[in-house]
Length: 216
Image (cartoon, rainbow, N blue to C red; front, top):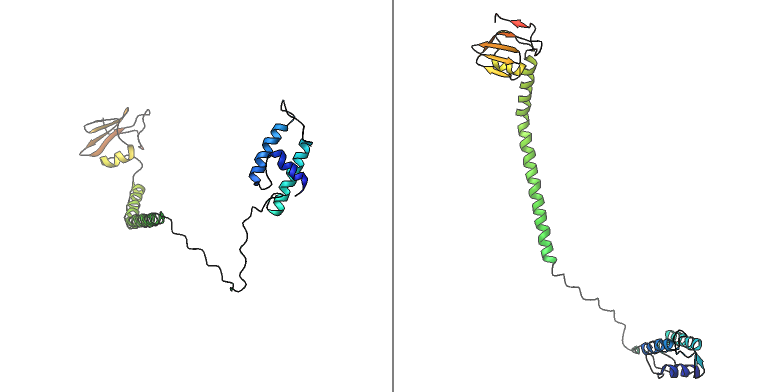
């Protein structure tokens, strides 16, 4: 063993057979004691200065990285088992299969439940679509009937018009008193639910071709 490494062990208070962890721990303590920032630090002890201590420490680390041991010590690596030349090479057995996680079964059940709910929702939507499809012809027929009535509806009042047609044409009256429907200052009079006369005021014009019909 190099005498410089003997000095390193001596300054750190270690023996050549120490471990790498012991070397690092003793080195940190020694450097802290020799650092110039400390009040009583000594830059030299037994002829070894702090820079020299740092250099030897780095060399010891490199030695350990190359040989697996510190200078003067034994290897930290376990010895390799000698190969048996007579024994045939056997393929390594595959690693045992990992056990399934404990929560695999609950997750599978949750997946089946979600799929069932999804199918149920699709079925409900399908039935709703079929119901709307069945209702479409009737709805179309009613729409066409309304359209025909709208096209044939009169656009003005005339004598003999029934109350339902007047209501659809003119709207609800502002006041209804018996047989007379008032629309502001205008009015429409009925006899036996049929229009017999009216008056259309300029302030509230009725849908008529003549402003007054009848003798009232």
